[in-house]
Length: 361
Ligand SMILES: *Cc1c(COP(=O)(O)O)cnc(C)c1O
Image (cartoon, rainbow, N blue to C red; front, side, top):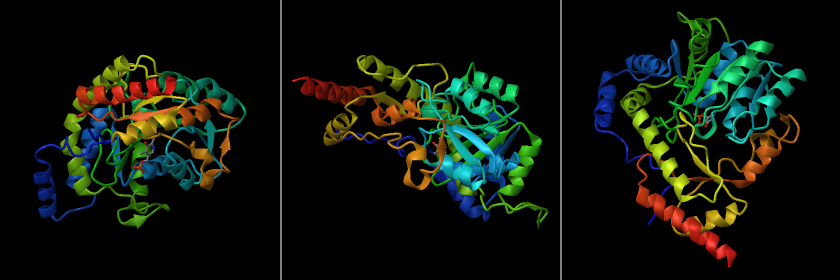
């Protein structure tokens, strides 16, 4: 049996080709009716007033920061078990990242957050809802209000994730999303969005995505970062299925947890949307090889914390970040996509158990 780590095709719905066909015939391909409708539908789904479609999640980080007036010389506190895209997005806004440690659920450690703020770092807090697990937003917002800092949530792995029924992306001053094809809600190319309840942030993000233009006149230095009509129509077709897909991911995670009682498995907290299903093993490399030899694809998210990549090794971390380092050496992502069957999970977990038996002998 061969199992890929992600399966993007099997869930694609009827109607997608017709929708794309209509866009092709419309003669309008950038920032048109489809983008405007998707912005309205997605921001409504998240429960905020505004959505601004941009070209990628990385761009959404840069544009959200700039739209809040954050730039040169200002610090953005975030975590390091993440894609380097987070650093790219922050640095391109002119701001500098300060990396703090994660807690046992792979999200921002709020005690260290307070420490970093007290030491004089940071103008913005950028929590990441990693693997689809919401960061502790009620606590982070309390800290942000106390110290008068702004918050941007990186929801690129958490479309539809909730805390007490409230969607992530609606807690902070702004939220950003990536619609990269492998995300829980994925386009067939690149796309991203900034969501916010703040009219000024939304207005400024709208200008910044297109050369700072207002009525054809550039009033501030901006970017070229637009969402296109084909991506928007694809995302509109898929959005109504997102909750069903997220529930399928959750029940796959539940099933895995039952089959892997001896492993450090993720908590099944309500509102988790399991972008990744991540276990930990001190013998990760051997385990990965055994699975791979049997045709079972796994991935590591992430083998290098962002601030240890050669391009960014000058970026400041707040101390040694032991939890981040340890996680980067032990985490392993098993397939979790919505169409994965329980038979496939049985097979994957059987191979994991057989590997453990071999090791003991
Ligand atoms: C995917 C991702 C991004 C970057 O999104 P792109 O659309 O690839 O630019 C940023 N942050 C997180 C947490 C992501 O998972």
